[in-house]
Length: 235
Image (cartoon, rainbow, N blue to C red; front, side, top):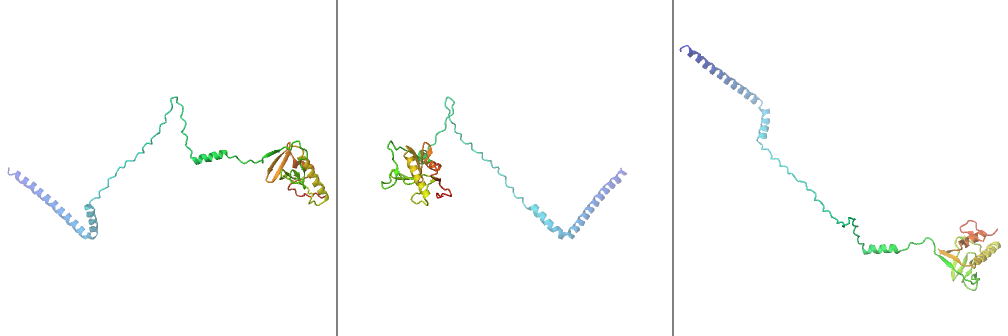
């Protein structure tokens, strides 16, 4: 019994000595750390304040995202067309036309387009010979004034497209003779029977059986086409 007691005392003394060493080392570390903090207090204080402020500042609540449901387009109402029992398609309904449009369409349909050709008049002289004579004191009724001018039923008419020699204002004897010959020839053609007259713009086109009176005078040398440069009948 006396030999075991000293060993237990040694173990307890060893344990107490080890715990005291660790306590001293911890105090030494705290002292050294405090010295370092004190020496660097100028640079550590601003960072420490920012850290404390960031930790103590409450976090801002995040807004909740709202889920907006997309509006779905409403289906358009479809118009159903009833088919007849036979299955044939139904013709579309006619659209009513306003009164003004109807009037305009009626006028457009009834208005005749202007004709590009002058109206042709058939002249019938009958069985009476010598209907046309030379114009003089007897009056201006169915008479011939010169090679391309004549009067018919009191209306003056002139052949279109030709120039004829003059008789009253002739510049030479040859022109006067040809002018009188053209005058006689026109009278004879007028008295030759029925003919056609087409008047436009103050001039007339006379023909018989498709042959123009003016072209016949040109072929016989008693007239020249209008607008020709040299129209002298003298020499």
